[in-house]
Length: 219
Ligand code: GRF
Image (cartoon, rainbow, N blue to C red):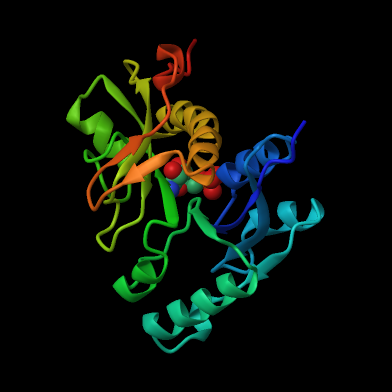
């Protein structure tokens, strides 16, 4: 098999890091077009850091509390990412608002996963608000990061049914299962330069079979 180019990716986390784990595991495949060069957390105690370190991945803790301002933290974060040689940044449960300056430095090179069907239900406590709104379908979205929170060209989505009597926890678990399937697929296309990206939208340049465009996590 011809060697494929594996784009270096840095993953940003703040906590348990289950999405990061799904990306790391997917990237183990020989034909995956990205490799994880570092996992960076703003919380030194993030459980995901220990997991990644055990896998032999470079881990970096950059405690936001030891910086005087958001600008100072973001400047250090940028320098840290550059130091890892990453060409792509994948946010995976990274719970820090970023300054527009940082976002601009990674324009069209930074992606994020959010546990709703954007542009609906941006922000925190997503599953609780989804249940309160009574919607029957929710899901998850991988998007390019723009300066406004949970905004940016949508790269891919997965739909997840909301069951009667779901709690935020039960719904969150179902959505998370979909996140773990969606994010590795989308990162693969992103790393392979398979998207045309404008300010607000992204278009896949490759044709996908219908069953790869949308999937149900219950299937
Ligand atoms: C995920 O639901 C993700 O969509 C959101 O934060 C959660 C992180 O979970 N941004 P994990 O750390 O990847 O397990």
